[in-house]
Length: 481
Image (tube, rainbow, N blue to C red):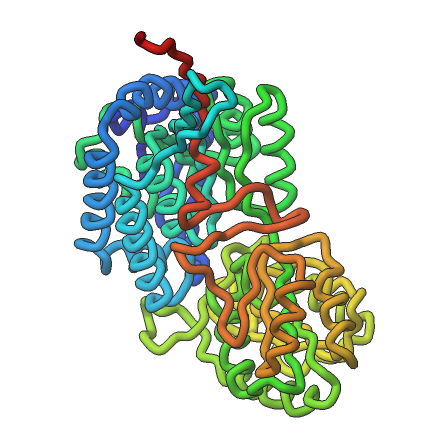
């Protein structure tokens, strides 16, 4: 099995690297492909080609750029089932979830293509009567897009579509755990009419390829989605050239369930959030604060819902609700956090262990009670199908607990009390708050975090800003008398 090719300057090229990485199906533990940890020279070549290509791409009219961005979405949609199976195989998520991720990626390309006539600037009045102030929005330049393993298709779309519609070129580094879909999409981008160098893909590890991209002087923006430690390394590398960073990092989403909530709705949505992608989503429900008066009823319903979860490999079983964790290493991390909670007095209501499967990194959907707000299981991102629950007395106390975190990405509230909704709108310090619905952002909204959850944001009109630079021109003139 030969390693897959890189894509540099409009061509698929065989890497000269001898550092080969196995890509493993997390449901079967089989090697399904191989990629390389690209060399420093190959990474530099990708950036140099992107730098040259961007100079041509920014001169292409926005309407034409939009047509190409839309065509990419159309081409992905035309082979949706192939890509969905590829995604399920390399990442482990159920096939229905994989189809949904493909659909969202297509929608994102289509949505961004519609900005083809909308990116503009301003004309501002001057203090001088013989002057106009022109504010232009221009592409920032070369974007390094570093993609995580948990949503490799959607985040590929998020970084590539936004780069292209704003007139930027892009170098993509997919996760070494889930590179296959990105490499397959490269074949589409090879045929849609992009100038050479506008799109490039290099495979490899974060410590090598990711660091080279982040420290390269011709990269103008590093758009990275991943963990807090990985984001810290990106910032350190970017600091060498004062390169702009756009980072979406970890989360520990608090879910407040009020005594005024529809408990059945809360349970349904929290379960969906917690088992989606086996809990490996930065905005999914990571900790629940339920008001004392309804805690027993809520917990009983939540345990029953989580217990009634069909776990398996959806390429073998269409009825699967949840797949495996991403890797053996990640399975061990989740297992360790739950075991530590048990050792500290937590009660496992359901799950709490690896599942008895022949192969694969499966962990049982888990509900944990008898925990305190300050416990590790309530403060550390688990990134697995594990739901710790604790209680609160007053709504002000719930808000205080929710805000007491190093993270600030997503949060959620279940209540039918208008006053509680408005208090949460004022007092919750999170980039996103979902009220009476499952956590999950809209592509026309804005996805951003506070504190250690990241810098900058994505999606919607506000998500374009990080990919644009602002150029002010002061146009002085004389009266023609």
